[in-house]
Length: 57
Image (cartoon, rainbow, N blue to C red):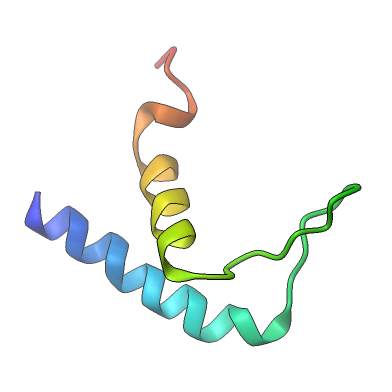
């Protein structure tokens, strides 16, 4: 469990540090930015690495 959380937090730091200055935006009407803060990015990476994004697995 520690290794999993460590890797999610490490990639959160890398993602926000590298991609935040690029101001990447979601396509669509809202156009909100990717990688805006650490908490949202960590949550998104956690959901993507678990079956929470596809519970039929």
